[in-house]
Length: 245
Length: 256
View (cartoon, each protein chain N blue to C red):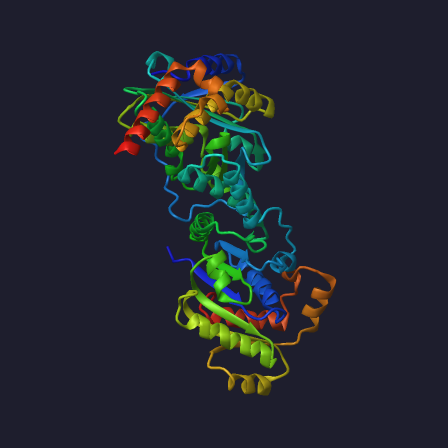
């Protein structure tokens, strides 16, 4: 099942042209101390803020069953790395590309949600994250102490990848971060807008009891994606069965 | 890791609980390596003013936005809604010198949005757990603390001036709180404000069964700060009132 092919191609094209950029191979056993239950980064401890409500922010999760489209274990950063930006507040872009297996109209939505929620399980000392999936915004704070200890895009990416690898249906993970400029993050936001519409359409389907396609805001999105139509048909069937049960 | 200590101040309006709360925040924020959360649960939002902080967003603003979204028919997945509220509440946290402040805002509009209120309370409780000390400046009644902030506090501090009405309200709050249905607490006590002298404080102590945590005299410096609208966090360290508030915090085992 494929929903994000065009967006993945567009993201890949954008990143390939972006400069300067650096790439690392993820550390498969990332060793950063855990934050614990009181891991909150307040203004007085703040070393770097990424994608705050005052700044441009985009966080996008894209999956594909075509594993050739994902460079497993690669972390790419466009812009300055975290320890180079002490005391700043930067726009933030993030794309997680996941190579998956066995997605169909029955499980795609739940699996997408499961993967989307993985970021909340990050437990890294001096790192804090708040996100609104609906608007694809992600707001991170990194403490001064963590930056001084070398907390970097590679460490964050490796920790996030480790969480994805625990999912039985994940075959490959690649992460792209952008900290370069509001323009770059804004461009990424435009490129990933079709994916946002697809996810919004899935959310609406899952949240609704009846399907009035003629009056639905996302009719055009579903019309463009046969897989979404199949998901909708499956959900309608499930809800019909539940009503008659 | 030590458990979060939660202190809530209640009492009749105008008895000086917000000034006392502001002085407590000043003292607590001077303790290094402790994360302090002040919660302004009074609709008048006097604590923010007393601390010299501008509040851009309140919990009630967040609540109203969410209710509007629900009423507009936008589907809301519960888990996702909780994450979004968590984001917005963190956005609403104002930063002071060594502490964070969350303003609850005005009371709810009419209508029942129990699920929204309950979700917000859960998020506030979760947020509070990330701090070492939480200080809540409440309204007169303890029910509002429970309804709008949280059910369980460690220390319930009732504040009163020397008026019979003020002491009566404190006694009534203690009575209501007694069965711990309104608010669950581990200790309860009274702070007397604007007391003339020790004899008056002693006389008042005979009119209540509450433990007296301490008493404060009428302080010209605080009156002057209030008059000028100056933040009480700027009150000199030599202030005798500040010293007494420190003793009250020591009595409650909040500071050493």
